[in-house]
Length: 172
Image 1: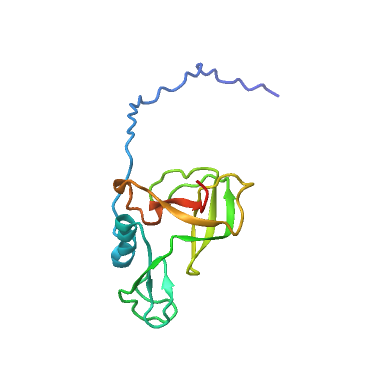
Image 2: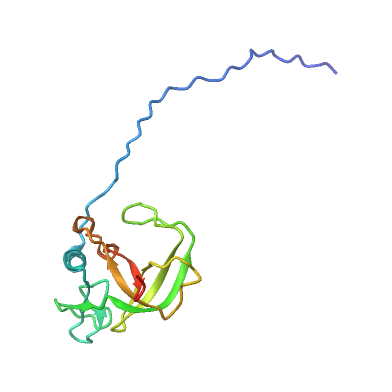
């Protein structure tokens, strides 16, 4: 059996790739989008008047939030009957989130960890939002809470995001 003679190869040198210039832009990537007639009214009321509003079906009288042009139950045009919802309520259910989440509208990271709750507003409407209380030991169902809005008018305009959180009533 004859030995195969191996070819000698020149020593390999690392390939030189193209040189890239990296420029970092630190600019927010905000964008404008149309909210439409109904959701636009909801956003405007939040920004201009610090109000939570929903539209009411002329047939079944049910209030919807987010507002909708057609009643999903009755299949009728909702018209322009708006009702202000209370800004106080009771924590019906809560969860303490420790998983990092991103705001889908602005791409910014939400505070982590934070408490999120389903709040039964004083008219019986259920609304999901953040709670001010971050201590897990102090969170409880049945807490009475009220909405705390962004004070600076120029920072408002994000609909439900204009409410910073719901704060326990009587706690200063």
